[in-house]
Amino acid sequence: MEVPILKQGAFLIATFQAALSDADLNQLRMGLVQQVVKFRSRAVIVDVTAMDVMDSFASRTLREIAHMIRLRGAETVIVGIQPEVAFAMVQLGLTLEGVATALDLEEGLAYLNEKFKVTN
Amino acid sequence: MISKRDVASVPPESKRNEEPSELLRELVAHLRQNRTQLREEWVVRISETRLLTAMTKEEIFAEATSVYDSYVEALETEAFEALQAYARNLSERIIPRGVETHEVVGIVLLLRDVLARSLFAKYQNDFKKLNRILDAYEPAANRIANTVAVGFVQERERVIRQQQEAIRELSTPVLQVRERLLILPIIGVIDPQRARQLTEQLLRGIRTNRAKVVVIDITGVAAMDVTVANHLVQTVEASRLLGATVIVTGLSPEIAQTLVTIGVDLGKMNTVGDLQGGIEQAERLLGYKVATLAEQS
Image (tube, each protein chain N blue to C red):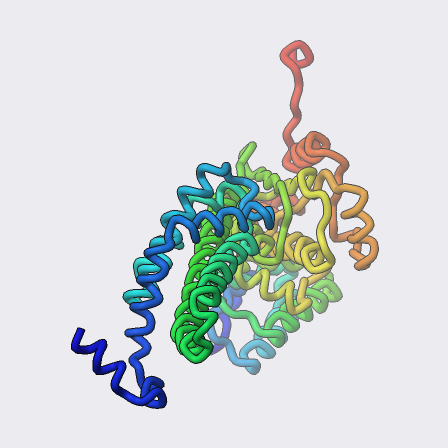
């Protein structure tokens, strides 16, 4: 199932659904990295609220997305990580270092708006 | 009387087939008859070996009487339920007074020895009979000792479990001190189980209170082992994944040493000396400014 990428002002928003295949993740990665330049976006929000399990491939992909997007001149915020998932990820050593995180989509938007001082 | 003549008429070899229960009955009768004297002797042996020092002489005597009677009754009926219930009841009363397992086991074994000695004395002229009596007595006596010891240990374990639950219930609360600011004061020893529980509580608290900053105060924790220290670091990282900044306050020198030994990346961990400093820094992060009324005007 393909992950839709929504444009919201200066930001892009991608919402993970449960049970994404590795191919879907790869497709999402390419889609985001292409569109972030195409739309001249300043940041990308990846919402993982629906994921109650996060395997190592998914969290590695998240980190790769964040680092690739930084190289493309924008910022990434991961939002909506579940408490259980967060601890499981840390135990696997997947701490998403260097990637901004926020509680949910609202928090993520508030963080970016504060950072870029944009209002839309 | 008829039976007596019967017994007398059978040859000695077939006496071996004498019912063990009959022997037990004889044994019980003997123990009943000499109750006062044997009990006295037992109590003397107890105080000689300095067992049950937490109890007064009168208490020991009263307990000894009921233990003796239940003991003889258990020998007679071979029903251990009553004795088991009594052992549990006794344990319930004496555990809070600091009576140890070795004391309880010790007194039961003493009673066994005292009774066995009296049997030796009674049957010293009839070695075969003594042997048979002991054959009947020993398994029952051992089972009684076992029952009492197990009852005592079970009761102790029950008390320990109860206390553990009580401690767990007293466990650490996650408190909101300001909008989006939580504090988690940790006091006492952290074992891996409690650490896991703390983490779960904290991560859930971050979500329900929509916290942005958490102050974990570990002033009340004297030391933690490497496992728990690692767990603390993981909790800090997991909280960050939920979008919350963690400030750890009140690290003791020993804990600081542990954290350095396991090589914590200090960039990931925000530490402040005391709880006050931690809350002040949290307020700065959240954009609060605390001022006295005089300063405001």
